[in-house]
Image (cartoon, rainbow, N blue to C red; front, side):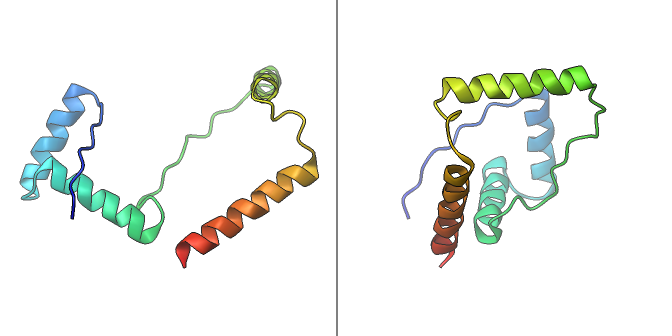
Length: 102
């Protein structure tokens, strides 16, 4: 199997901690990353929960976030999609994912 290089940027302190922990596990960092990647591909999910903390949002912050998203959509030419077009894209995406699993 052909090999490829995968480069990741991370905090230097975090990398040192990760390298030390991997050594404690009896493997190098590359092996740990490969185990992670194989698990993600095999299970088709991140093998642990990723969650954001609950942060109360004021009404003004919510409105500002909504307006910012609306502006991004307008700039990317997605603002004019109808609900039917959005649902069609979602349906096509789901069908493509199902076919990829087979």
